[in-house]
Image 1 (spheres, helix red, strand yellow):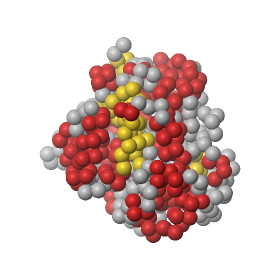
Image 2 (cartoon, one colour; image 1 turned 60 degrees about the vertical axis):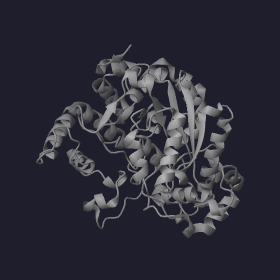
Image 3 (cartoon, helix red, strand yellow; image 1 turned 45 degrees about the horizontal axis):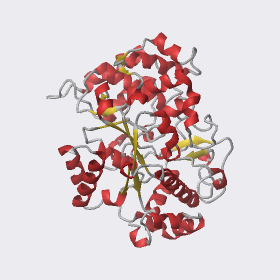
Image 4 (tube, one colour; image 1 turned 60 degrees about the horizontal axis):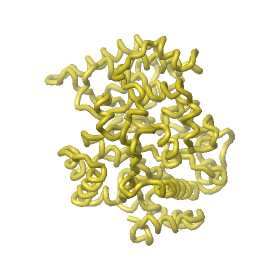
Length: 458
């Protein structure tokens, strides 16, 4: 078993012959070049930790915090791109939403499953302090840029030559170690120039102050292209240690995409040997709904292209290039929200995701479910550390000094649409209250999750 490396010809055969599109052909080639990887990846994972939350509920921040724990494995970004590449995204899945069932795993077939296994195995691992192998780093970056900009292409040999040259030039500073990772934005900017025209860095997860070239420029309108595989804001290249067989056998894999709230049966079937543990991350409805509202009006977060324009008040009427784009997770029943107000859509997304988690919770053993408040992970340092220790005890892992330090000092905002501020939602308090009351069951669910009065909506 152990590790396998596929030749390009073998990778092409795993896709069932000719790839369905140019991106599929490029990714099949890269699968053969990026090895080795652990075969039968999804069948070998022994523990899967699902960070279940609403969109804008804090899952990115919590997962970024947990990346400081050596005892855990992660994907480099979201789970959604892998499903889209496997034909399991909206609308290809046939469910009309982000929902997936165990039957979707069976429908993949063995060839489709091997391809999905390979892509996940090549992505899983944990952050590293330095680049161990320039070729691996450059090939991983080629894959990531490929799914971010699927309509643009550069030949792999040219990409690799440019990547090596870029790394060499960016490291030519006094005292810089040979394997050091250059500043991500520097590597990004240098690499993207090889396309001969700039790729808009506004679509990356970068604070504006790191992008001096954008001073005075307006954010883009509309999606980054006509096809979205990875949703913006995009993940930056990073030094990474890929998971080996021993890691997968002994460490838990953490996944945190909010849409997974509608895929719990699918995940159980995809990882048949894994103990499924659910870290249910809650956040008060006002803050999460306000964050969703900001995200819908942000220049990123394009998730699903609809066949016809929507009529969402406060969104479709003043963002014409986004009228066909649904942002964030796509819950079952979303069709009834296409002509509601944007704030009501956001309340519906918050309510439906947590309802789905609670519905699945009934099928979990008590020891496989832990509910954590986002507010307790963003409070004072003592509270943050206490909650991290609670999570690691539940996971039965040692937190380590790096994780405890990160919990105490806090981490920078992740995919933030605005600088963090206490109770930022109160600027829209009236509209949020109206939306919470307009979407049936939202206020009752908030009370069930411990947010009974607005005094708890910090």
